[in-house]
Each structure stands twice: as C-alpha cells, then as structure tokens.
Length: 357
Ligand SMILES: *[C@@H]1O[C@H](CO)[C@@H](O)[C@H](O)[C@H]1NC(C)=O
Ligand SMILES: *[C@@H]1O[C@H](CO)[C@@H](O)[C@H](O)[C@H]1NC(C)=O
Ligand SMILES: *[C@@H]1O[C@H](CO)[C@@H](O)[C@H](O)[C@H]1NC(C)=O
Image 1 (cartoon, rainbow, N blue to C red):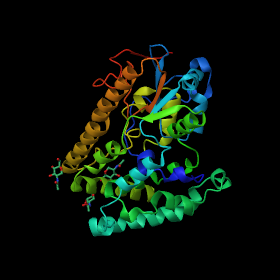
Image 2: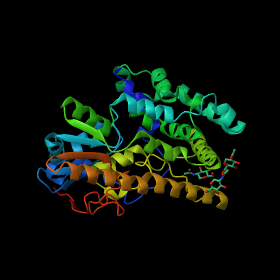
Image 3: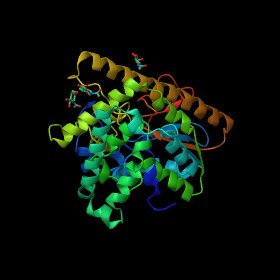
C-alpha cells in the first residue's frame, strides 16, 4: 500500500462538514485545557466477564486530534484484548475496492447522462472551484509530508463523473476547507485498525461492505436530486460568503474530547450523512428532507444497530473465554448513556456496564 492509499477510502469513511443543527450544549473549552487523566471522559464500556470485553466509541477524525484525550484505561483495554472487531475491516484491500465499486454508476453510465443539466453544471463548476482552492486550503504540515493538492483532489474526487449521485453528494460535503486540512493523518478508527495489525491481534468486522453501502444507494432518484441540490446550494452560499457551516468537525472533536455523548451520539456528523432539514425550506421540500432523514435513521441507525448487536452477541457467546475489543463509531452504534447499543439492540442482553470504568 502506498503511504497515502488510505486517502482512497471511499466517502463513507470521511466526515462531511454538514449543516446538521447544533445538538446539546455548546462544547466547553475547559476539558481541552485540563487533560487530567482522572477528569477525562471515556467512550469505553466494559462487558463484565472473564476476561472482560469492551466497547469503544470511535470517531472519523484524525487520531492525533483526540488521542491525548482518550483515557489510559481505554488504551489499556485495547492493549489487553486479544481480538479487535471493527465495523468494517478498513485495512483489507477487498473492503476498499468493494466500497469503491458499490459507489459507481452501472457500467456505461455517466453523471452527465443521469443528472439534470442545471445540477450537473453546478456540480462541475463547484468541483472546479474546489480544485482551484485546494492548494491554498492545505497546511504547511501537509505539504511537509509530501501531500500535494492535485494528488489529494484526485484521490477524493478523481472519478466523480462515474459515481452515483448520492456518493457525489457525500463527496461534495467532504470537500470543504476544514475537512481538507484534516487529511494526512489516519482517522481514529483506521489508526486503531493499523495498531491492531501491528500488534498482531486477531481482527474482524461485524458488517459487510454491502450492508453499509446498499442503504445509501436505496434512496430514490428524486430524493437524491433533492439532497444533491441542497448540498450544492449550501456550498454555493459558502462560496459566496453568505453562510457559515454551523456544525463542523471541530465541534465534533470538542464534544468527543469532552466525552459529551449527547452531542456525538445520533448526530448526522457521525452517521456520515448530512441533515437537510432546514427551517427556511418551503413546506414540500421540508417533507422530502424529513423523508430522507427518517430513511437514513431507519437504515443506517436502527436496522444497523440491530444487525451489529446480534453479531456481537453471537461472537461473545461463541467465544466465552476470549477478550474482545469492539471499536465502533460512537455515533453509528448509538451507544446510549445506559451503555446499551440503542434501545432496540442491547448487544449483551443489557449487561454492558457504563463507565467510569
Ligand atoms: C420517492 O420516494 C418518496 C417517499 O417515499 C415518494 O413520495 C416519491 O414519490 C418517490 N419518487 C419517485 C420518483 O419514485
Ligand atoms: C434546487 O433547490 C432550489 C431551492 O430549494 C429550487 O428552487 C430549485 O428548483 C432546485 N433545483 C432543482 C434542479 O431541483
Ligand atoms: C436552508 O435552505 C435555504 C433554501 O434552500 C438556503 O438558502 C439556506 O442556505 C439553507 N440554510 C442552511 C443552513 O443550509
């Protein structure tokens, strides 16, 4: 694998700086100033058995941004566990190629043939703008690591004309200045996967690529067009300077550092899809936005939790004497404050213990 090949991770693994409304209290800066071990919040849950097993909530942000704020007990739990499970095995080249092909239009189709002319032209114009801006968005640190704007643009958007519109929408969402600045360091879940490999732990995944990808491909055409149109409108206002994205990756990092579950859980930022519900939308469009939102909640949160919960339970039952470490997205797995994976799917029959450790 080339050093930058993880950039080719499909958009599913990127964090769109979406327009999701702020949820919960604003992050307090205090927990950034006092990284005392005893005061750190934890995204670790212990499953009481011998040896113990753990759930750990990860996020898709560069691990260097949050690593120092992850308490030692979580790192020790990872070290001690002999088996580490992820949602998907991101170190497996098959996973990456399957995700990539799942995002493609059927053979012979092109976005230009699929999209209305107006949307296609706005999309093309926007991507030309991003390409032009990219060198100025990159940090000296990124350039120092040999990361070039052309390379990065091509890695993220190179094949855009062949992608399904829903994936182009997610891609556009991740092509913002803030998100570009955070490229070049593995995201936390990928970093853990690389560490698990380096430490020769047994690894596995509870989901199949198709299970993550197909639900997104299941929105109908008018819904997808709506989503893409809204995304472009938002980016166009950003470009014109008339809009500030209200909820950014930076906020998510702050909430994670502060262990502020209510803000991380269930946020669209962590389930990777933007929220289009916008109070200024005309009524009919608001209905469409609501429909898209409930579709995603159903497919990407509820159904998925249930599926993942069942698999976790089966693994724990099949290997009662093994210590597992399950590293799942804090948002996707919808870890609730009582330590279960969502009310629908207590992964261990409800005996997962909440921190503090
Ligand atoms: C797409 O789905 C929505 C909601 O289920 C429905 O109202 C609409 O008619 C569908 N549109 C098409 C083109 O199938
Ligand atoms: C895009 O959205 C705007 C505002 O909601 C609407 O006026 C316009 O007709 C939409 N364009 C397309 C092609 O759907
Ligand atoms: C809400 O929707 C309107 C109309 O589509 C758009 O002009 C505005 O920028 C949107 N606001 C946000 C925060 O996305």
